[in-house]
Length: 268
Image (cartoon, rainbow, N blue to C red):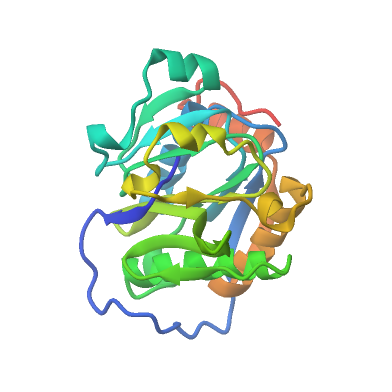
């Protein structure tokens, strides 16, 4: 999938708040990491399959961590003014265009950006969607802190921001959806990527929104793979999950053999 900014729950949850639920025993979860950028459509197919399995209680909680091939994704609040991506822009950037059912407007994904798709039964971890988004922000903020980067929240602007060139700059986007109590879509952290494709859109529908990356802030190259590993550790700590790692090839083959719904296995 892909994400931009904001959240769009499938239905409302009572008792939304920011307090953490006490869970001394970690939940079990499956971590799937991809070593090469993959097309958005492949990740979306896997997300939907995992969500359907989770809703049916045939699959546990999971987190997909990956990089995408260049793609613009348009969420539910996208307006024509938010993007001017004609055919020439798409050819120049090498990006595809995808309409998605998450919250938020348009954003860009590409190699060098770590994208996370949690497929979780929400009630195990949070009191509602608002707390869920805050916990995702917390994962991103603590990942940035490992690199000496201070991330923060801005009121009514989901995602994570940093101070760059004397202004607020967005370094991570969040856009989620919740159906039948199970999450889908997720977040994207700009690690070390070409930021120029963002110049063709109004990112997340925000005017004068500067987009930055960890590499730009630190003025040095970073490894998305290393950051993804740290992100998985922070996610496990904040959500109280114990990961079992599974390769995309194995997961893809399992779905091909047992469910006959994955048209082609995902490859690292």
